Amino acid sequence: MTESPLPVRRNFYGRIHGKTLRASQKDYLAEDLGPLTLRGVTRKDNPARAALELGFAANKPLWLEVGFGGGEHLVHMAAQNPGVTIIGAEPFVNGIAMLLGKIRGAGVTNLWLHPGDVRDLFDVLPDACLTKVFLNYPDPWPKARHHRRRFVTPDYLLPLARIAAPGAEFRVVTDIPDYVRQTLEEVPPAGFRLERQAGPGAAWDDWPSTRYEQKALREGREPHYLTFRRL
Image 1 (cartoon, one colour):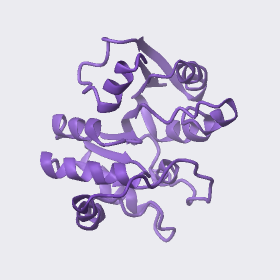
Image 2 (cartoon, helix red, strand yellow):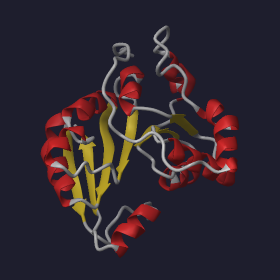
Image 3 (cartoon, helix red, strand yellow):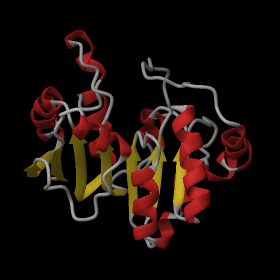
Image 4 (cartoon, helix red, strand yellow):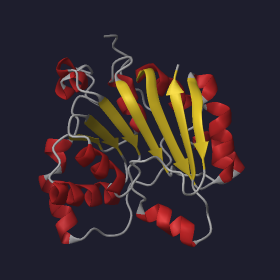
């Protein structure tokens, strides 16, 4: 296992806080977040601890969801795949609180969380450890001058390629046509092959349509489902 460099300071542009949390959500954060948080991600004294906590020696498949929003998809995948370990990375506190409530309700036990910038997680995970990655309705950053902030740029894709195993599946779903364009342009050069591109009504068999997707459909925005494979 090759250890990557220690985390570095970098700019982060997304939201961290939203509406005022309900009392129950504050309880979830106080009681549940700590035990589910993947330690060793930002601790510079022992960056390899993240790998140890995940128990790679158990040979369980390791999946990652980048920006899990309210957590519907993440909890669904954990419940449907109990033999898999899944990491959810999300900096938005309100989304984390929503997810924690769903975890309590579903009783899933195969989830770890990184409540922060996913690039910090990329810094400490070992080479070729991921077998599946989900990027569901990422922040579109619609203004042209902000396109460099999108996930589908080398700053994110090259570190992701390092920790994705050969043959790993990378799923992207978005309702923004220009995000599809940039994804198709940027992902293959990073070391992934486009395997499938589909539109409305042709999602993956295990895809649980999220509240965001239903809202997008009501407002006339069509989803695009892209599947890539790590070379």
